[in-house]
Amino acid sequence: MLAKSTVNKPHCKTTRPRCGAGTDECCKSNNGVYSFLQSQLPGKVQWNFEKFLVGRDGKAIKRYGSSTSPLDIVPDIKAALAATDGNNEGEL
Image (cartoon, rainbow, N blue to C red):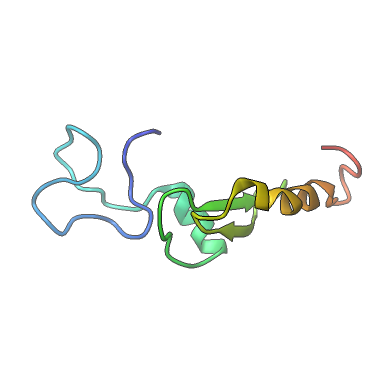
């Protein structure tokens, strides 16, 4: 879970492995979490600390660049928490 992984494209361009310390294999696919998020909000992950806001239903709502302060996301988080899906009205 905490091993190095790819998010934009697999790394198999060289004979030297680039993913997973001490492994003999290249990364053959992207990190599954990022593949899922990028399928809903397309675009290349630009840098570390890019953020994705995910709703209660597991769908990506919005993405934010690395330079976005977490405090700037608070209004969107509050709006997502306030949103209801009809099944759990008023509950967090």
